[in-house]
Image (cartoon, rainbow, N blue to C red; front, side, top):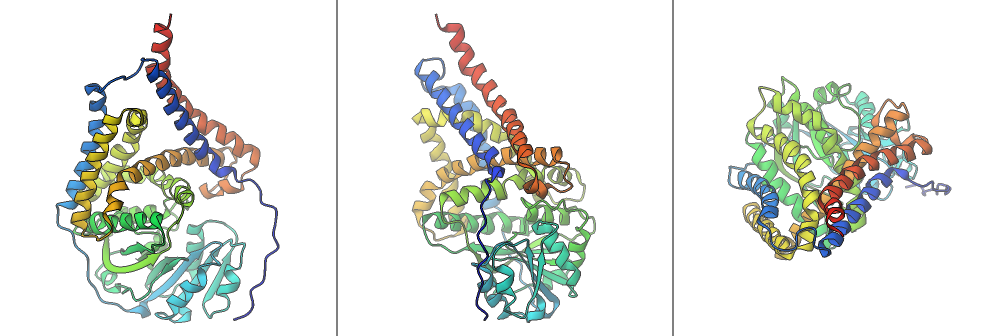
Length: 460
């Protein structure tokens, strides 16, 4: 293989696209500190209160109901046949020089070189150069930017009826490619995606991935209502992907979720199913990178698909399980997160509330672990309720990021949401100010009404 070259280093410009999320996280910290200050003055909860418990109990009930539904109903995988000659692999990548070679080698053990397309999305490192050392087709898509648009560009070169979409850090190994399910009329197939473990951060994610697949997606598999084909790997009909070229917003965050929901919303679709074929992906290995993945990558897509969730709820032909998932994400995650935010100080400053809440969620996780039949260490279950709190904070920061991106695209007169990255810095700063101001005002009004105003009225 030819020797790699080194790209000249350029001066890194400050990335303002994360600021809205981080600033809102600071606001949440100030909100909690404000609560603690006025609690010491005796103007907020000073002892165990049944009224405060009533605020928290609905959150327990909602999350517990979801655990019960998914854990105590029939869960299945789908078996099928395989015909690799009917598949073209499209690997979407950006700056993946550290992982792309291993991915290509893994693919070439199963597929012919002409069946593999590497769609580089404006990579600035050696990704295309490394991929060019093999006989696969390499597309260096510099404009327009965006993973979805790079995939759409690659679809022009696909001649087979089925497409395997793959991230650049996913190894297919010996996983079966269930083309038989697509021949039965299903439009998409999800895989059992697991992660490689290297430290305690990745081990927690390993448990999370197993639980999501072995409980959540297997529950939906009965009615072909799998709600999300992971962006790491998914098998699709070419017809369905081409149909989505004009319907998909092109936004990176939640692009896989949007793709799956659009399949369900197609009136002639038979649905999305899950196979027991297992593939592995590389997870974040530090708290910082995990926080960034969830706050700036995954969870903004949850809010971006709000309209699609509403459509799922209102369409007549939708499976009940899929309707419930849409209802849960709209009303019991997005809206209840506001209640979670307002009750956060209570959990921090009052041990009884924390102990009770922790015990409730520990019970939920024990049930999930037992029903999923995973063999992960029990210490993961013990700290998983705290991991859930971490997930809530990442969703809160993701909401700030979601608002910021839409504001900056609007005031910059961009056509696509992912073009927020190329907006002028002054407009980014303006969007940061507007987005965090809206969310900051909500926290301030709550703090003022419950803490500051009583303090002003009572203080001599």
